[in-house]
Image (tube, rainbow over all chains, first blue to last red; front, side, top):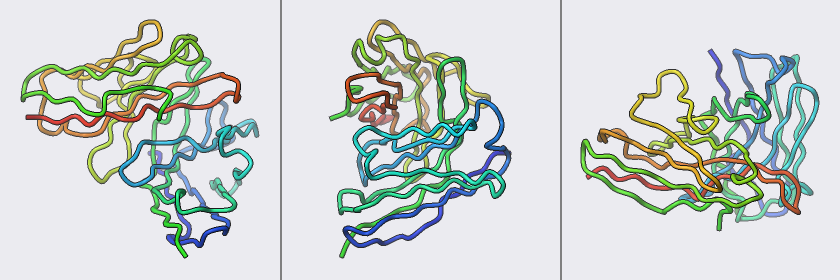
Length: 122
Length: 113
């Protein structure tokens, strides 16, 4: 059974750096075709993809946010960490960690964590 | 403004059929990239509903179906039930000037009358 859970601060101040941890079970991030992704959702708005980390150490970032994002994985601890610098109130939202499975040339997000609400305010 | 365009809302009566469109362009859906659909019930995390255009994960009722043609994709829900009331998002990929990226549609709120 695949599960993922996000953890991190619920409140950050503008200009600070956000660090979120995804702790997962039921799969290994060293298995071919597997990855972990981060997606966020501002209150009442649509989903936005942020970053992903593949089993083969390939990391990808949203082009619009890539200068602010870093994703790292710790395969032995079953964790993936996302950092986002220079936080702004517009970054307020629920941040989801997801399991990614490759299917042919593409992938989809087949398991999601419950999400963690991050508020950016002074 | 999402690159993948969905109607903000659709509605249908119990037992009816509704469709939700997802319109892209030649650099995403039209580039033969697969489309996936997610259902988000109120106050919960999204759930994978359809992947690779038309495949249902185990446990998803066959009332849900997906299709893709050209630069658009559609999600159809037949035999509407009250528990289908949720937000629905399409997802694909884009390989434009900004680089490769994962795209989500703006979401569609399905109301069951």
